[in-house]
Image (tube, rainbow, N blue to C red; front, side):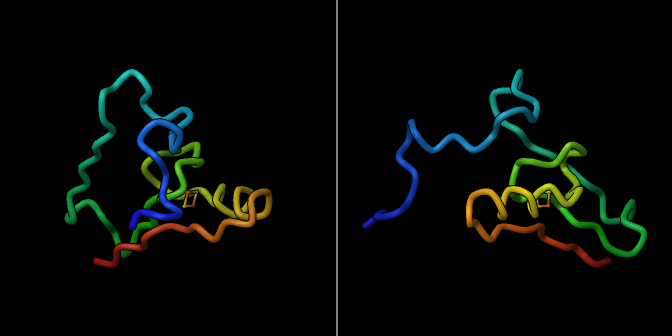
Length: 73
Ligand code: FES
């Protein structure tokens, strides 16, 4: 049923974001969003948790199609 999904051990996606923490959780107050904000979903950004466009290189290298979630106020 889970065909194509990552297995529990081999599907690691996070290579450098807050690796010292057991689980990466981020909180953003809606009041702090000026107009809109793009949040990274590819785990390649250098400005976590925000998208910095690094998904583009990842997609080019891997054939993936990931991108950010944009939250509008
Ligand atoms: Fe990760 Fe854009 S850099 S979604």
